[in-house]
Image 1 (cartoon, rainbow, N blue to C red):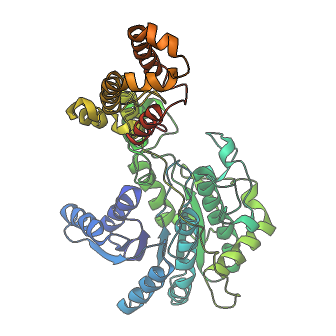
Image 2: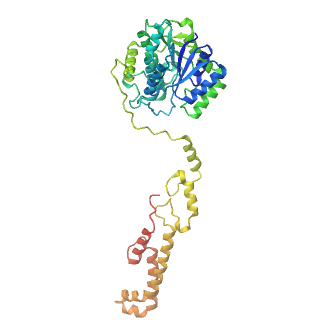
Image 3: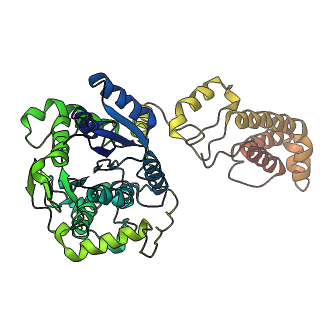
Length: 461
């Protein structure tokens, strides 16, 4: 198949780029429909280096934004070109942090990008494909790139994607139902369901629509939203080191070949409503073959995309953004700090080292005890000692007068033992000072307690 106009979404990298490159080499006019102009133009430069006379152009299209999809179709119509083939290749697989993300149209991001964006693009270009077929080329094709992961029974089997697609919970908005694997599985299943429904609606138009799984290709940009460790494992461990010994793992060239085959294979002329994997037709999941579900998902998708003839339906407003999981490096900080340092006065373990450094720079009478509720600081202790000395000196000077007041009724004892009484009173004053924290008998001790209280509150650290 040569000399045809072919649109490929997500063609700036991975299997989309390699398929565009091969189709250009075959003499086709290929439009790279991509979100990033910079990356798409870099991809085109690579194509030109290999095939200087290639017909490759870029047109901006963000499948997660229906406004962008409509603008792309307008721009394509402005070129005046016919359309022979549409390849819906672009897709996304979010990371496993299980944080729901949303498209510009409030769709759950995976469903919006993998299914609803391509669904709208296909239907806005249907008239172009039908017109081309009616002009004498009765072999216009739509190819939807999906995945075997649409089937819960396909390996790797995981309980995270075992639930059936629920049209009442299309965006997995019900509490506790969202996870990244189920959202991906549902988006690819929705693509297959609507492929089968559309194939019935396009009978006798000269336009065929099929779907294919290119295989497990860990080295593509599909998991670009995954964490660094996961991407490294997929691209370099599975995609390179272990690939020769793991049969299910495919290369980018394998995936591109699968796309090109369904686009250009003459044996598939007029064949529609099929699912291919490893270049052969196979049976898709039982869920995807449910006729009632096919119609329900098709009509629901048409409503969300505001297609003519269907009652428009808008997605619910997303809830407040869910907090991102704490980065793993924060755990490393705690492990490094906790064994060696205790929490500082601020109570913040992460800044314990800084608190300790600040404490070391303080003078002794600025430091407080962070681990005891009732232990006074050095400032209070020093002030208390000064108070003791003042009280003690005062007691020595006024002892005779106090003794006289207390011993006035005992004239005999006062006369006989004046010296002993004075000593006895001094001893009593000292004893009062030693038990001042547990008794409330004189004004001197109350004054000292007020002074301790005002000097600093250590509780709560």
